[in-house]
Structures are given as C-alpha cells and as structure tokens.
Length: 275
Image (cartoon, rainbow, N blue to C red; front, side):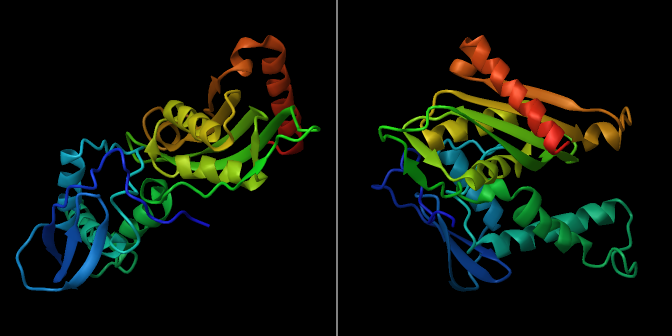
C-alpha cells in the first residue's frame, strides 16, 4: 500500500500560494507552492509545458532533482499522463534524429510512447512514487529480538551515465532496534531506491539510509553485487564484470565480530540462492 501524496513541509511554506497555469494537449494544470500538481479543466489559455512548470517550481523551492532523487512531492499519478505525452514527443525527436523510420517500420511504431511509459512507470518509477508504507511492529517486550537480520533483495536499476541496466542483489543487514518491519518491506524499500538513475555507490548509501529510517536502527549494513550494462554493452564490453559495494554503519563498522557474522550470512545465502 502506497502512502498518500503529501507535500514536503520543509520545502514548502503553507502561507504561500503561487499558481502557474500551463497547457499540455489542450488541458490546463495548476501547480501550487506546495509542489503538488493537480489536473483542472480543458482550456485554451496559453502556457508552458507541464515539465517546465514543475522544473521551475523545484528550482524556486531549492529542490534538487538529480536522476537518483525522489520528486514525488511534485509529481503524482494525476499528472503522469501529461508528462508521458511530453516525453513521447521528445523520444519521437530522438528517433527522428537517429534516422529511424517510426512511421513505416512496424518495429518502431509506438516505440516513443513505450519508452516514455517505461521510464515513468518502470525503470525510474522510484523517482515519482512516495516511499513504500513500511508498517512497523514494536520490538520492546521482555523477550525482544536483539539479533541480526539479513535479507536478500534482487534489484533492477539504471546507470545515470548511459541509461544502461544494472542488475544485481542487495544483502541488507540490521541489528534489531525498538521496531521491526515486515520482511518484504526490506526488498520494497531497496527496489524503490533502485528504480532511478543512479550509481551503485549512491544506491548502497540510499538503501542503508532508508532502512535505518524505517527500522530506527543505527546498526545497518548493505552489500550490493551487480552487473552493469554500461560495461557489458558498450565501452570495454566486459561481459564477466561484477561490481561490489558495501556500506557499514554502527556495530557493523565498529565491531569486527558483527561484520564477520554479516558476511558469513551472505556466504550462506549465496550458497542457498546464488546471484
């Protein structure tokens, strides 16, 4: 279940109310200072593309919108169709510049829209969707669990540099704190972080931060091993390459025995379910 759209209170002042009208495919849309974009009504008023309005609003609010950033405070499902329409036109221009006949080539007809939908709804979905609702359970009874938990999560991401696929596995470890989350939530959070344009080093940090936030645990570890299309499909063409990154926090970093237990658990999981 996804969280209801809520504007970022830190970035937006409730006392402000700035309204920009735009026109996209003959439809008007309003952007308030709270960031949220809502569909209004058909109009003939002249305006700017929706993507430009949202981009300008993020700039004015000091909101960073790098490929790996979440911008769900500015984009919701009501405006995605308009943004997909704009992206479709942009992809059509790219295909035209590549001299691909998208009018008579049966394999290229509709490719621009498929690309636009894929970016918004699949490979970069984590940019536009709020964080998964990680329901927490209290871990404060007399027989509370105080041990280590290690979860294996399969990931699909995209390299920011060449927009090539990244495919791999994250091993997430925590020492249980005052609350626990459902096991599937670890993977949902990891995939939400991964479904963006990112670097593996950044992704490792992002997952560790979000898991710590969801569990209130300061003792968190994330180990990722993945293959990168930017190395396999272009450049060095290294089809056997494998990249490994590790983030260790709290006891995982400071206690050698905890660190060893984490990596021993990873070895056991790799034997059970190899990458």
